Length: 329
Image 1 (cartoon, helix red, strand yellow):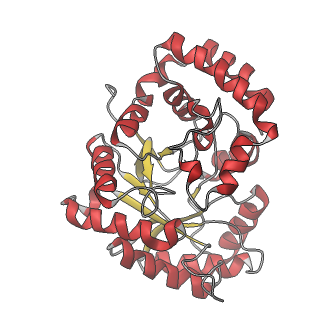
Image 2 (spheres, rainbow, N blue to C red; image 1 turned 60 degrees about the vertical axis):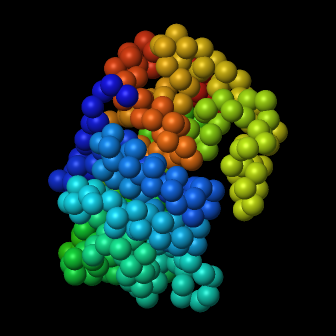
């Protein structure tokens, strides 16, 4: 990575997040040990990453415990990094320990702060919409956490445009702190939600986005072109659903697209992962792209996507669109 880290405002807020951030989903507390997690976080931080993404549901809270221990021992000033948690899936499945009720939203916030060993959460997401809880109840709970200083900004993840519209309406009517950010999946094969559904909220309301799965859960690395390698994370217990999705009968056209995109990457002198991440960064509605990695070398490679962004001219973007749009959702 030769290009210095770029920082972008989180939507219309004054908070600046690194264009590339680092997330703990799948790996922390599950696939990799604590020493590797420490190396990954320090590699990211040293490269200018200032946003670290987490959630109560990642490894049933253990991902936050691992990250919290690293943050506590890092020596980094609290003002130098942004850390998140998400509420919905819970650490256990007992009544009132999942969902977006006022009780769970508030208790999960305090539990996440304890696991992460921080006095406040910079970002706190509703990890999924909760059909069993009125949106007004959730909005009031989030507003109170912000007002009390336990959370600085709250947002949503994988909410529909209609659900966001309702949340904004409730917050405006009641004078509550509204959502500042949404965390959608976004990559070359998952485009419509951000580009069509969420874009009006980004433009009109200043909604920021912290996108996840920029490489389509690894499909855009090319490593699944010929099946699942023996050392793949898809062989991890509990990820059978992801393995089925990435190896199902409908994935053939996307594999063909991956091979065609690899040609463009080679022509640009870069890797397929860097091409996919850089393409995400070209969208003006993307505040930050969350990277995941299980090895420091892999993370360093993906951080090199910043070098690729200037290479994605309108002509190159048009070629990429011609390949990806026909097989994208």
